[in-house]
Length: 161
Image (cartoon, rainbow, N blue to C red):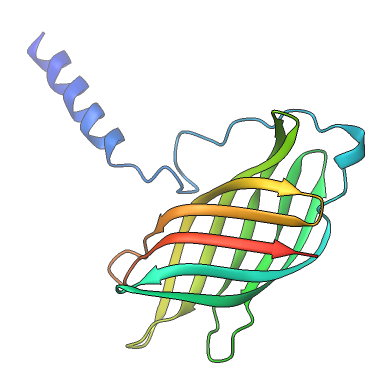
């Protein structure tokens, strides 16, 4: 009985330490609801906008560019910071569904950029938010880069086309 309890406690402790946004996490994103016919391909294309975030206590805004593909409720694509002097880029992977007759996005955004002291910053976090005709506003509370780079927080990403 003691061994069973010990194994259960160790398993619980190990599973609590998982990163929920890790590609190896045991909890996948929820399956998307079927999209309505009028929204099947409406996100595909070029989106530009701005990402506002806090980094090391300073609030700032960066210009962004994204190429997004959307089919059958699944969204994927690439993005990059268009602000000079910043080489941040990453992937967008997620899905869209309707909530109260409005289209919403939920997914994972990865980030890779040069680290101040050399090397690369790599992180990922969950983003979500509403999508209107030609505007998307996605938010995330924080993105952690491990011990390589300082985290960013209070992220708001507004894109239009």
